[in-house]
Figure 1: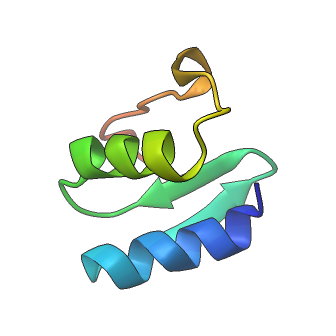
Figure 2: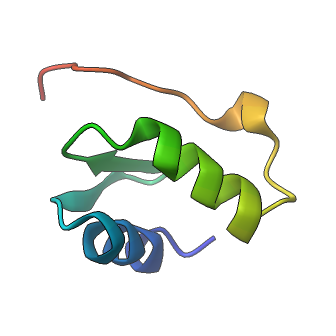
Length: 60
């Protein structure tokens, strides 16, 4: 999965801030967790849901 393109997809779809912050991490601003999980399951069904982590409101 191209993380940069995915972050751009999330930012456009939810009109929020979204950026790649690590080699395997995208940070999305806003309360859109459920919608993002739904999009991931639909757009990339081969991604195991156990590999997706919700880091919550961690300070960066």
